[in-house]
Amino acid sequence: MSTDPDTNDRMIRFDGVVKRFGDHTVLDRLDFTVGRGEKVTLIGPSGSGKTTILRLLMTLETVTEGVIEVDGRPLTHEMRGGRLVPAREKHLREIRKQIGMVFQQFNLFPNMRVLGNIIEAPVHVLNQDKEKAVARARELLEVVGLADKEDAHPSQLSGGQQQRVAIARCLAMNPKVMLLDEVTSALDPELVDDVLVVLRDIATGTDITMVIVTHEMRFAREVSDRVLMFDSGRVIEEAPPEKLFGSPTHERTREFLRAVL
Ligand SMILES: Nc1ncnc2c1ncn2[C@@H]1O[C@H](COP(=O)(O)OP(=O)(O)O)[C@@H](O)[C@H]1O
Ligand SMILES: [Mg+2]
Image (tube, rainbow, N blue to C red; front, side):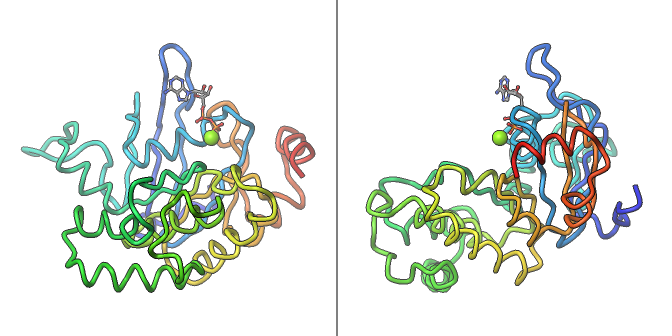
C-alpha cells in the first residue's frame, strides 16, 4: 500500500498473521505496518479482532500463523543457531519492556498507592534506582494532572483519575510503543475529556509509536496519522483520518461510521 513505511521506518509489522481460537478465525492473514512514531487508530465493529491485535503485540496471545515484528525483531521468535525458533521467556520479557498497554479497566494494583503503582515496573523490571523512579513518577503525575494524588489508593480516585495513573504508569517504562484499548469506554462521560486531553498531549508531544483502539472518533481524527478499518479479520480500508472519516471508500466503512458517529 502506498502508505506503507520503508523497512527502516517501521516499528510494527504484521505479516500474514492468522489468529484462531479453536476453529474461529479472528485474524485472517492480516498484513499491516505502523511507522516509527506513527499514531494509528484501529476502528471496526465489536468482535472484529482489535483487542486481539493489541494482545498479540503485548505477547498476551500467540499467533497461529505468520510473523509480528517490533522494531525489526520478531516478537515471538528469536534467532538461535542461525534459525528462527519460538522465543524463550527471556526474549519475551525483553520485547515486553518496549511495549506499554493501557486497558479499558485501568488494571491498577489495588493494594498500592498511586506512586507505588507507577514505580513498580521501572524498579522491578528495569532495575531503576528507586529515587530516580520516584522523581520520574512525580514528573509523570504532573503530565497527567495528578501531582497531588501520589499517596492516594486507586479506590479513592475517580475512573478518569485512575486511567490517568495507568497512563503515567505506562509512560514510566519509556515504551517505544504504546497500545490503548478503548481507554475511555468505562468512564462516565464527564470524565472522558480529561483523559483524552492528556493522551492528545502525549500523542502530539512525543515520538512514541501509538496504536489506538477507540470509539471516540473526534479524538481519532485529531491524533491519528492513519486510521485502519477492520472487518472480518482484515484491514478493509486505511487512510489519513480526514479521508477515512470524510470520504470513506467502502460501503462497510460508511455503514460502520453511520452507526458510531
Ligand atoms: N481468549 C479467547 N478465546 C476465544 N475467543 C476469543 C478470545 N479472545 C477473543 N476471542 C474472540 O475473538 C473475536 C475478536 O475479539 P476481540 O479481539 O476482543 O474483538 P474487538 O476488540 O474488535 O471487539 C471475538 O469473536 C471474540 O469472541
Ligand atoms: Mg476490544
